[in-house]
Length: 306
Length: 312
Image (cartoon, rainbow over all chains, first blue to last red; front, side, top):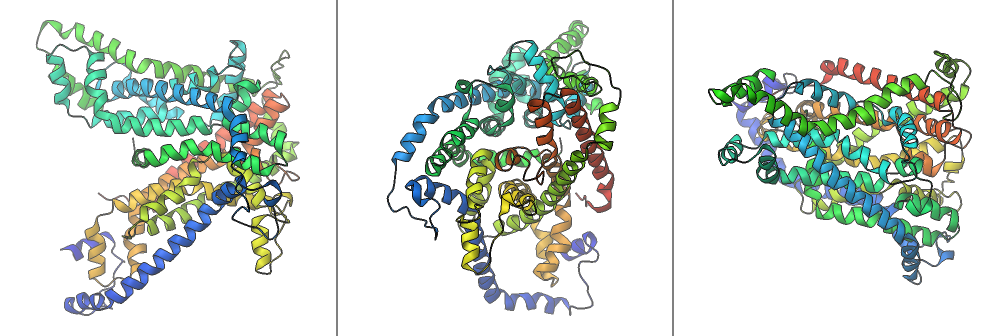
């Protein structure tokens, strides 16, 4: 039966003429399997390790350079282990980065909480409430997912200049939290998977629509909230374009721009630069390790059809 | 979809009295829930997009009284602005390379990470980690790796007897160098999507193919690959849209140089709008970008049924 299914699905996949009877077909792979299996596994493992080296090399080089004395960073031939571990590079870099770190943390917190709030409201509305114009509103949201951000950035910039938002943190979170297109799709999808009985029960208990949403439904979609929250954190933390065009004052800048500013200041001190670069990537890496499951879930769900 | 909702609400509704006032309350509740996001999209995206079309037909700098130029900016882009052609060509090369290679490498990595080997999760995490690293840090690290004399890459090449190029400062290799960095950072996303695709494949299909004596190679191309085409199709669309809008890596590593060898569309728009203050001209460039992205995406959807295999 299974063989039929394969043939039906992939008609040209198998040529019955080359194989013998069913007995032979089954026997052939079985005898070869063991030695080939071990050889193949070893080959896969070696490939995985070599590739891991290639992928990790730039980041390892960064950490290694961040601990070296200045003159060793570009020594010839290249060295990997620093002759002396200069941990004070990190103290110097951390000292310079602290105000920018606080700005990045503040913006990430505002983006994550704000976006989760508005995206879950809209996601629930689209998943479970019936109202006039729902399909039009949803189509509008779908359409905006297609628009390259560059097209609306210039008028946005003019708008923010008009209302005095340039050189404040407002343009770096207010538009984001009010346009959570991907988050709304993902949460809508999750809300649709919650059994209706839960809402019915809450309704019978006299809960309001908002109360049902907030106390009964929201806890049901925690994994999706974590996924959207994690991706939002990354987008906020690593945003380069927004701070670049909306902020002028150094004291308001975020971590990625701080690195750019550092470069101007300490261009020759590559070891300090690398210590600073390492510090900027640590928070997202920690978050990624802690919430890897949710990341993968969020990324994967972005690949599903709405 | 609309039908099922209508019938669902009809059955949910209590029989009498409240029937008439319920829709009104439902409408209000619904719009209170989705309203903030819809208003946000209108105010921060749809409105500005329409405004942008208007601005693209002027010589506005943000300070002057704008003159209406009609399609003048667009005509200038395609007739007198030779730099724009270079930019479009660079963007196209970057995009084609990124779409093709990131999906191909992502597929290879996904297949490797899908093997039943202990600790494979560690490798998956490693391959994905560049994707969560900020582009400024990445740009700095690679800038030094590419350093022509004592950088790690040319040192290693010298070790095997190859005299490496000047990478970022040579116009003939700068774009390739940038593509390598972008791939290093960018393959994690296709890998995760394709890994999920691989894991959702019905194992009995693969077992049946094995039973029928199909080699691993044949089994992959005739059974696995066709079942992955929906994921690959999704990735071609996503990778096209994101690669066509590359900015950070160019800003940090080359600023479009040397000699315009790495100037790409978004970086040019950024320069024209925010360094030169030519908002009208930059908006016209933005609309060209929008039209190209839109047309190519529509074309991709049209081609979908030629090669994408949908099966329950």
